[in-house]
Length: 203
Ligand code: GRF
Image 1 (cartoon, helix red, strand yellow):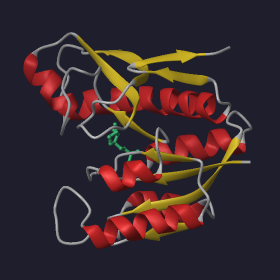
Image 2 (tube, protein in one colour; image 1 turned 180 degrees about the horizontal axis):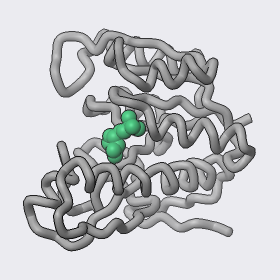
Image 3 (cartoon, rainbow, N blue to C red; image 1 turned 90 degrees about the vertical axis):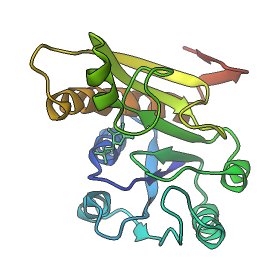
Image 4 (tube, rainbow, N blue to C red; image 1 turned 120 degrees about the vertical axis):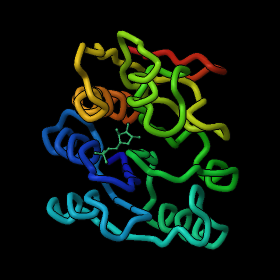
């Protein structure tokens, strides 16, 4: 069985959607490991409720990345769990060279905007402040940049009059819960082919 690791720092709604799709047989994979850099993160509770292997691994001394020791701990945990794909779902740390080299083209992320618009933090708020009429979410491979790797798929979400950051974020997250399981399923089936920046979905 294709083995997924899901890494997150937040409430874990994407983990829940992916785990449910695995159980329902919509994704030919299993969630083998859930890791978080936040001890009290909802994603760990979500994992425990579903009896998935879950661990907090302390991120070390930096705020936006893992320190060297922590990075080594994450890598060795994931290697020991023999994961085939690392699925970032709201993991709030930038992953650097050594981590990405350990899992080449096997780390994916979901970002709450239509990249390359609004990379970085609170993308739904950036979209609202900019005044765009549509935004969405993007699943992409992770490379050395911030939210910059080859795009696997995107889903558009309208920005409605009277939206608040919270209401827009919720609408984007609803789309994420559809898009991410679909992408992870295609990756598990080996149907996503990558050539440079282009990805092609085989049928
Ligand atoms: C998602 O909105 C994702 O786009 C962003 O972080 C959030 C994670 O949400 N990168 P959850 O923890 O999966 O509910």
